[in-house]
Length: 293
Ligand SMILES: Nc1ncnc2c1ncn2[C@@H]1O[C@H](COP(=O)(O)OP(=O)(O)OP(=O)(O)O)[C@@H](O)[C@H]1O
Image (cartoon, rainbow, N blue to C red; front, side, top):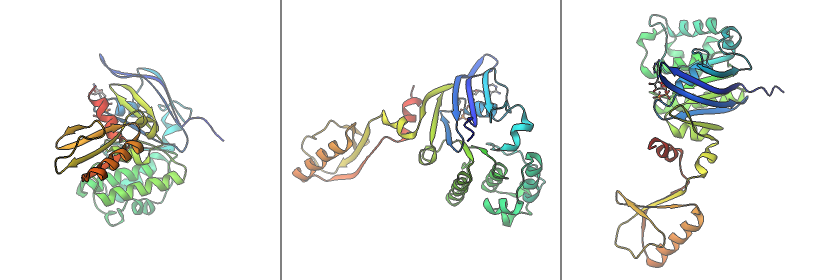
């Protein structure tokens, strides 16, 4: 089996004039993996991905895609599908013509009807791109990335502007691409999307990784949280809590034990723990912790 990483980035640096946007960034994406590159605004995600996609030259460092320089587009481009943040379709082409053009440009083979069905645009096949809604344009962008089921697929903010049905349909399609063996690289600001699906996450802040690992590795170092409100005066709580916006919040590294203590206390004193929530730290909390740095 080929163990060459699909993406291998080593000590990548990118500068725009005096501005050092990406600093000594190193990461690998393995075959079949779902990797999410997340980060604060301006962290350098797009700059990094544009370099990996072969659109931008690194200031220094090495970037390999399928073991090759991504600037060698003839070798690499047919093997990867890219959904950019903004589409570059000609407004006068129809949806069908646009998808067919992608096939020609990427040199991948597929059935245009199959791809239109996959992205739910069969009924719009003869519609001009200029007449599509924002969500429909986004689905056409997705079609460009998945045409021919490429080995490597980049999804840059894929669900922005999509309604809930279209989002679900997009993630179903991604699941099927993964079953077919495709490697997925995602950037998104919807953290729950990454939290639910990614095998590994690179969390960027100001040009470098703040953290990299699986979701559980990223969240493990933060305490779990119990929140609730009290509708009537109650005796002193059995655990230290902080009050914010009328709710009490307990942070703990022993969730089961402390939840047990709290529930017993409530039972013994006949106290209602209104709107009680307990659970591990979410990725949003990791994000908030770095955004404030
Ligand atoms: N062409 C450019 N010229 C100068 N500065 C640039 C250029 N492109 C990006 N930058 C700067 O480089 C930094 C990284 O930008 P980049 O678009 O890679 O970030 P990002 O993580 O994708 O951000 P966002 O989440 O806001 O889309 C930002 O500070 C941005 O202003």
